[in-house]
Picture 1 (tube, rainbow, N blue to C red):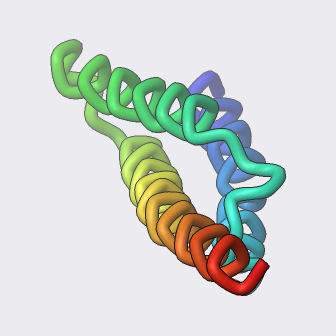
Picture 2: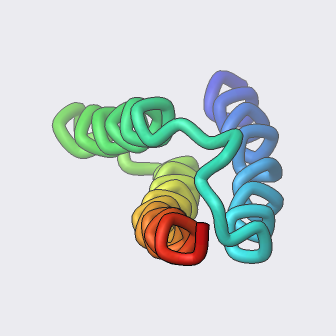
Length: 97
């Protein structure tokens, strides 16, 4: 039963990441995003994965940890891309301004 509840928790968390990725991709800006938050969440997922592996309690729930960690990592990469785009826009605005 506890694995089922943990899986439901991971699915609920995981539903939000595709939406966040889409927003990051289309917005092309870091406005409203926190890289510290993303890194903290990513670290949490990595620790959860490590915990499962160290306790040798590898179950199907591990798949959800991995999927969520990948999605957060993608959002971090998009944050880095968007930060570069923000800087380019700032330089362009300064030159034109």
